[in-house]
Amino acid sequence: MIPINITRLQQEIDELALISENPAPVVTRVLFSAADLKARAHVKALFQQAGLAVRDDGAGNIFARWAGKDTTLPPVATGSHIDAIPNAGRYDGVVGVLGALEAIRALQRDGFQPARAIELVVFAAEEPTRFGIGCLGSRLLSGALPLERAAALRDSEGRSLDELRGTAGLGGLDLRQVRLAPQCYSAFIELHIEQGPLLEQANLPIGIVEKIAGPSTLHVELTGVGGHAGGVLMPGRHDALLAGAEIALAVERAALNSGSPDTVATTGVFRIEPGAVNSVPCRAWLEIDLRDTQAATRDAALKRIEAAAGDICRQRGVEFKLERLNVDAPALCDARLVETVASVCGALGLPFKKMTSRAYHDTLFMAQVCPATMIFIPCRGGYSHRPDEYSSPDQIKCGVEVLASTLARLAGQA
Ligand code: GLV
Ligand code: MN
Ligand code: MN
Image 1 (cartoon, rainbow, N blue to C red):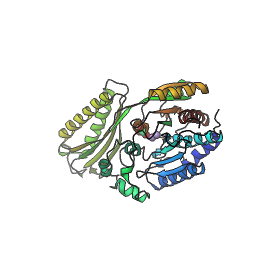
Image 2 (spheres, protein in one colour):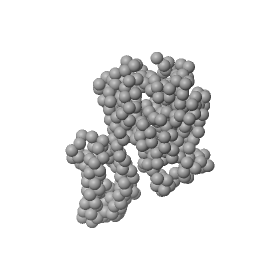
Image 3 (cartoon, helix red, strand yellow):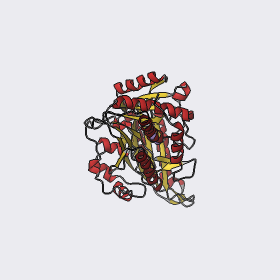
Image 4 (tube, rainbow, N blue to C red):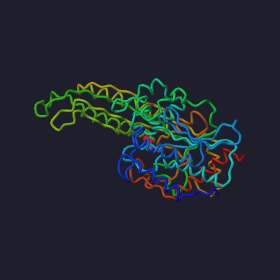
């Protein structure tokens, strides 16, 4: 058995959680915020202590490489993200970064010499908080996001990716060099908490991901007519908030009536102006997240939402703009890689379940570049994106054991 030091790993997870924009137990680390920059420097120092060669790319992805004996072989890659949405917990993404580091250190302690290099990737902005679009780093690595579209992204304060990566000290690195060359990795494996309840309910330590649901994001901008809450009589109102509220209900209906239990739709952002109790809302912005494991079902629901938004705004005399920020295909994981992880679980005596990921991950885009899959571990109650997100040290240890053994098999003993 590869000797995982779970005590040290848990300490490292807890230490990283303290680097946050909000006090514990909340973790918030938005791309290129002060907390994110500090966390990036912190994990890079840990990678260096493990003797890994560390580099950044222009998008803010971090690469930490354990060199292989045969430098002509493409490395096997692993990793996840350390950015965290507002009010998140400490395990989402982090288990796949610090867990991968511990898997590498355990292999080193075990005297393993990789034939091909093992590369740990920390993806920039898996979370959509800064620019509205998730998996920014892996989209750029895979080429799924054209550079012109990346250049047009703005955060809520109007700042561009170029401006922010400049303040992060990455301005000297060329964004055009971020895209990975074909065949640059032999495989990619991401360790992650499940973010759902199925493993816990089945009392299983490991899930192996076969498919990742396809996400999409819709931005809606509504312009109504503001005015005095006492003075503007009801028949003359063009309230942007009320149009938005009806659209949010249409979003819920589109998922409920899609015919598939897999369709999920969320209006997660709803901002209004001017935001005063005695003023009719004149503007509203909605950000809508819609997903399904079948692209066709998701796309049909997307069309129903767009049609409903048009009807609602016409009836209410509110102007609207709709933007599809991303509409991504579901990802199929590599069947051979899934079987490799299954065989590792068999060898370790760990029961597992093959499953679908309803959350998206950087693997969604890495699967476009090389054979890819994910290792899931249970999390309490299936909770995630909440401060009480929790996986036990034993659960994390099982995941890291499976990852370490899988990396060893894929890298090969030199
Ligand atoms: C990833 O964080 C997701 O929203 O699925
Ligand atoms: Mn997340
Ligand atoms: Mn995640």
